[in-house]
Image 1: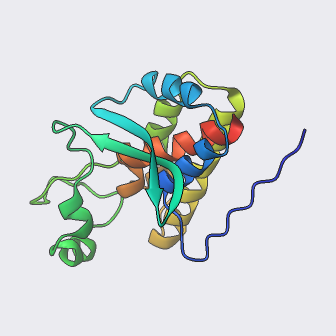
Image 2: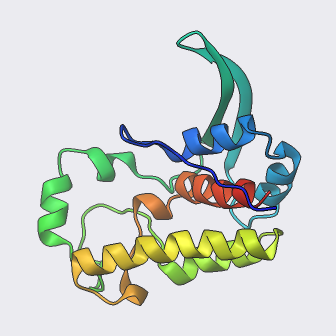
Amino acid sequence: MNKTLYLECASGISGDMTVAALLDLGADEKVLKEVLESLPVKDFRTEISRVEKAGIQCVDFNVILEEDNHDHDMEYLHGDHCEDHHRDHHHGEDHDHHEHHHHGRHLSDVYAIIDAGKMTDNARILAKKIFRILAESESKAHGVPVEEVHFHEVGAVDSIVDILSIAVLTDN
């Protein structure tokens, strides 16, 4: 049976909001937990709960990074030196000269994480398609080949978990 899901995103929608909405629509929480537990990425956990927001009962989904997980360097993403970093940083160059360290992944790294997870073929295909679209956009924006795109925010564990969860729950 074909079903259509329409998301009205005029004001935007985050990954965790999308995951929560899919769970609220009836996607299987157990299936999601099994997939996330099978990933070769650790130092995170998820919380799924029912909450009330603006007088409406709904599902809430959060990815919590453990203290030891320095995968998502928020200072780099939102800090004062961000403009300096973008001025001096070029994808594909040697990064040893940088004073700060940040984590990121290439598309092949994200694909390896997806491939290692235990999920349906359809969920795997959808997750890879989402990341491929992101890589193509980054490639175009930075003028580098897709294979050289270095994901920062969307390569972080919480973003990978959000996007992979959306693919798994959409398939479910």
